[in-house]
Length: 232
Image (cartoon, rainbow, N blue to C red; front, side, top):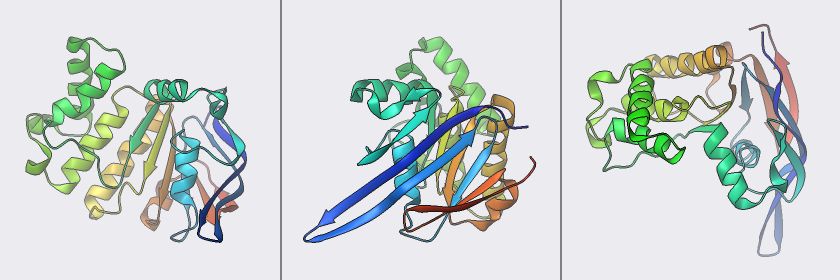
């Protein structure tokens, strides 16, 4: 069973101007996701998927509309307060991994925990536990250049999950992975939702993920076109 409403939006609108033209990327988009569920956002390229996740997570300010995240009116906060909210409550998994070339797998995860206020000892303990959960214990001392694509993504997931965030945002998390590694990634996201009661919002083109999602939300031309739900 999924839980309480974790994040929702009303009337999200985002436009860009280029020369004399105006491009509407989000057009009064309403969205909702609950704790303990994987909400999959699907749509063609240019439909507004990545913009939606950026606005929901506090990375990109909308021109209009509101986001309520864990009971907080997100876009009424000061920029520094939004940064702190993300640090305390959000985990991010990006298509390009976004790992630091000079840091080992263990350091990639422990540094985030240090920023979140953990002591060096606690940060290392939690980082080791998170990396063990994704099967990376034998690779703790390796840097990104020494890891495969699937291993890099598992480090990125461990980094996102280590602080047990209540909101997880994933942007095309499986697009660069083969079937086996893609399934492993989705299994980890499902575990985060089920065992840690996180709301997982995932945007993707990958239809393999539909079987794992609790709800599939369709977006087209910046509008939420409909949603399909199923029992977990």
